Image 1: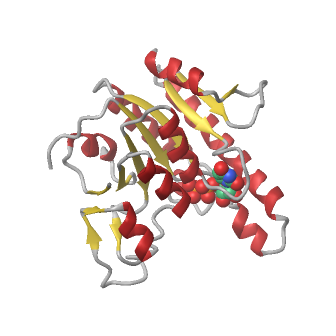
Image 2: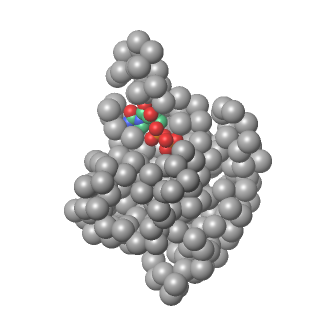
Amino acid sequence: MAKLAFKRVLLKVSGEVLMGSQPFGIDLATVERVAGEVAETLQTGVQLSLVIGGGNIFRGMAQAAKGMDRVSADHMGILATVMNALAMQGALQGKGIDARVLSAIAMPTVCETYSRAKAVHHLEAGRVVICAAGTGLPFFTTDTGAALRAAEMGCDALFKGTSVDGVYSADPKKDASAERFDRITFNEILARDLRIMDPAAIALARDNGIPVIVFSIRAPGAVLQVLNGSGKFTIVT
Ligand code: UDP
């Protein structure tokens, strides 16, 4: 596939990826590896913003299903994304990269509070902006937060770095006959109810004309490969 010409990219990293081979939490070696990929990608001159999930630490819906109040559970999930963001900020800074966590929920003694103006200012100064706390609201996900921030910051694409190498017709871990797509439309994903991202995130990306590129960030060098058009991924348009 041809080289993808993007100037400003939002990279969403699912929390699950940061567990590495552990069953839970933050595997610092994996955070270091992903930070290394971010560093390599920056060398191409692309502006990068990150959104990191929290599923490696806490998922609101899963706890609500066990009887916890959903809003409190989601708030805990949101706080988990801030922990991941701080880990990534530290790893990037350790590589000499200026990175700033901007949180959707104000916590001024921990990090800056998100505003579009601040985020764009940092990006234009060559800094990596890590958008933490998702949308800042319960009943949402970090995928929706990623689509929202990508739209606000005028990103050319949303890279969804996850554990699978693209969009499939069914869960490839459960269904060996699942078909993999190189390309698919947002409307087809919604019509088939393919759960690669939640429908709110899909609709936001579609309505704002932001292509979503789904790839496995577990494979070393994956982000650069996607940018070069050489990796394995699905483009959603
Ligand atoms: N969350 C939320 N609102 C948001 C983003 C996240 O309530 O805008 C909560 C929600 O409970 C979610 C958890 O934070 O389950 C972790 O985020 P997510 O599941 O999106 O993480 P990922 O699957 O990407 O690791």
